[in-house]
Length: 138
Image 1 (cartoon, rainbow, N blue to C red):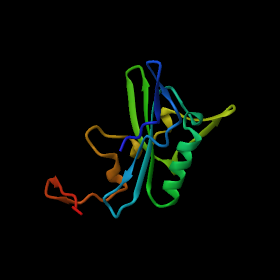
Image 2 (cartoon, rainbow, N blue to C red):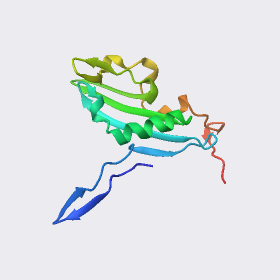
Image 3 (cartoon, helix red, strand yellow):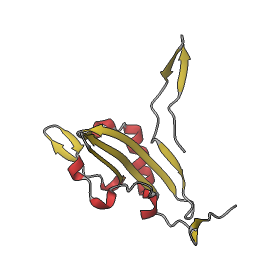
């Protein structure tokens, strides 16, 4: 589920009432584990300060409780485009001068998102039958 921050309509404009938690949350099919992901798109580096404290707290809580927590990041630069799904507890923050950040060269090959492939399949057992996915009905 994609989460939207609370908004108000004031004098013909939308005003964000408060910060949202992680961008995506839900429950996974493999036993009901919790899922949370924060997504960012940057050119250059991603500063840790771009992750709001409420978002980081939710990702930490999900990871510590045994769920799947990810930082989904798209690095854009000229003709280069790298998309990655980094497990939250493994994000390789590096302190450069005074701020922590990650760069495109910090992305491990196993974190790269392959077009057309679900990045969740790395950490989640998805039931399949033949070539079709079949999800249990409750």
